[in-house]
Amino acid sequence: MSNKIAFLFPGQGSQAVGMGRELAERFPIGAQTFAEADAALEFSLSRLCFEGPEETLRLTENTQPAIMTVSVAAARVFAEHGIELALAAGHSLGEWSAHVIAGTLSFADAVRAVKARGSAMQKAVPAGEGAMAAVLALDAAQVAEACAEAARETGLVVQAANLNSPGQIVISGAAAAVEKAAAMCKAKGARRTVMLPVSAPFHCALMQPAQEEVARVLDSLSLHDPHIPVAANVTGALVTTAEATRDALIHQVTGAVRWVDCMQSLKSAGADVFVEVGPGKVLCGLLKQIDPSLKSLNVEDAASLEKTLADLKGGN
Image: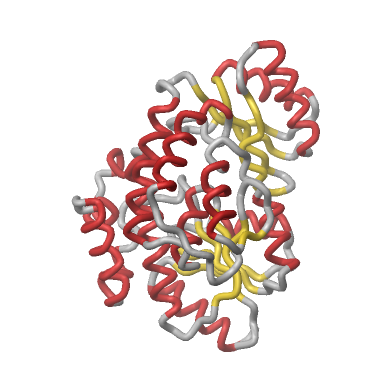
């Protein structure tokens, strides 16, 4: 296999009851990954992933370790098939999963840290006070302009939170400011704006208390230099040291996810196959919008694993 493979790890929103069950049932390394998560968290995260209930799985402090565990299980199962990984990136929470696979921090430490991260993000802004909205088909400069105007007019925080693809930018902040900015984006020619069903306004300045908690948690952990380069959400550039990783994971809590830049960095570093590992295919969809010439595959269960392996071995 001469492909240069980049793993992509999904973030919050890709969760679904039942995720990871087949990985745990069919593959010993999958079962072991869920057992490690249960032991690290001292509760049955595996049962929550496999059986729900959905409203408990949807709580940010549960969603984040749950998605990470499914992603790490999928990546480990995939790696057992002789796959050589060259690069990685993860969307928001997924950046932590990428660093587990890159050997930057231990899985047990990471799963506990993202539970604390989720809890801190949930508590940073009282329910109902924050909001996020997707803006479709408007360029980043005009979205930034609309956010700046809305922030000036309302005196509240609103900023671009996820630069997901050329046609999709998510804004985040105080509810009234997000609604005003969304209306301004529409007036500037956005095809659509959609208020998102989120529990908190992620990746904006309102997350400062959560960022401080994440910094505290990371300071207590031992990090190593990643053994493969990992794209940092907050800059879009590749990181190769423990120090740069710590900085990237802290600042991404309030910073924008520069996903387009992350994908361009992986491509520039020679990645020619992108494999989304973990629940769903959100990142495969975004990659098609960013650069339709790039090959994307996914691994989330036995069927997608077999299909991706066949595709890579066939070299097509």
